[in-house]
Image (cartoon, rainbow, N blue to C red; front, side, top):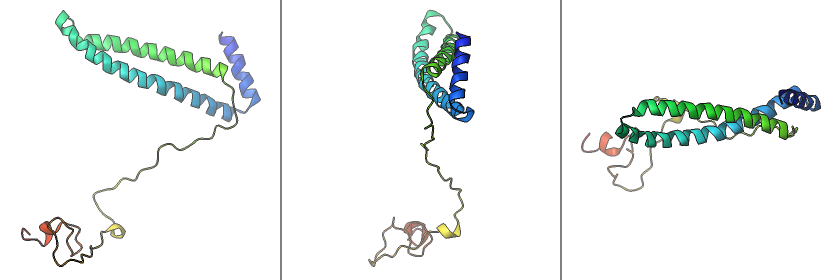
Length: 151
C-alpha cells in the first residue's frame, strides 16, 4: 500500500510541478484537519458534560476526561492521516490552485488618536445642546461631561 502511494505521488508530481503539488497537498490537508478539528471540539464539549456524572460512581472526572480525551485525539489524528492519504490517491491535481482571501485584514487601534483622525465638532442647528450630544467645542466628549452643568 505504501509503495502504491509513493508511486502515485511521484506520478502526480511528474504530471505537474512540485509547487502546484505542494499547494494541492496543503489544500487537502487543511480541509481534512479543519473538518476533524471542529468535530473533535464538539465531541470534547459533549465529553465534558458526560464526565461530570462520573463523580457519582466514585470515579475521578478529571482523570476520565483526560483519558477519553487523549483516546479521541489519537483517533482523530489517525483518521486525518487516513483521509489525507485517501484523498491524495483519489483526487486529481489541477492547475487552478489559486488562493482566495477569506478573512479581511483588520486594523488595530491604540488608545492614542492620530491628528488626522480627530473628531470634528458637530454643527448643531438648534439653539439647545442635548446632554448626550457631542460638545460643540469639538473635544469629542459628551456635552454633560465637557461644558454641561456637571462640568
